[in-house]
Image 1 (cartoon, rainbow, N blue to C red):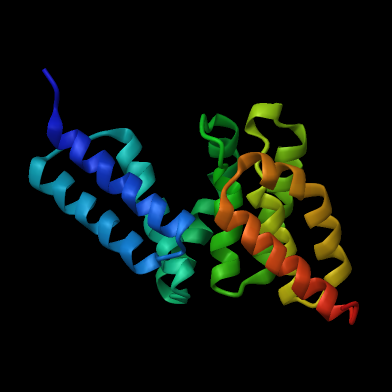
Image 2 (cartoon, helix red, strand yellow):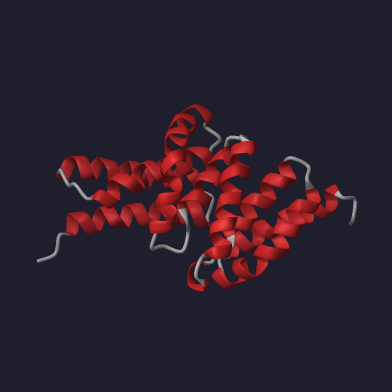
Length: 189
């Protein structure tokens, strides 16, 4: 009564998420998304979630790898619908935050801030259970990269309680590194 082919695809998509979001191993993340894509084609499976997840995960992987050309076209197309997806998302993470992170990955800092600040605004209004700390890291890291160190610190101070509550060690470590970089940029060691 179970469709193990679909379970296999979900497993590969989740492995992709683990590698790219928790380990920052974008190559392995890409490998598992590509594997899921091949399985979908081979098994001729059509699940709406897969249609949304695969391009999003691939873009996140390519962004992490700094592949500008593969990411830019998809990001520009995605921007107009991203807030709707964020409000409809049942997950802890929100799509507009991931869009901001992808722009940051290809050094388009104006767009990263545009979507990152939208994500922070959403986060401020979201129910407590959906508050998401990584959003603040994205904005803070973008401010550090654009040498606006005090703004980076301000966003990290606001977001740190959510980062700690979400309890993803990688996110907490990255936020602390950006915090240190911001203070270093202000010459406050």
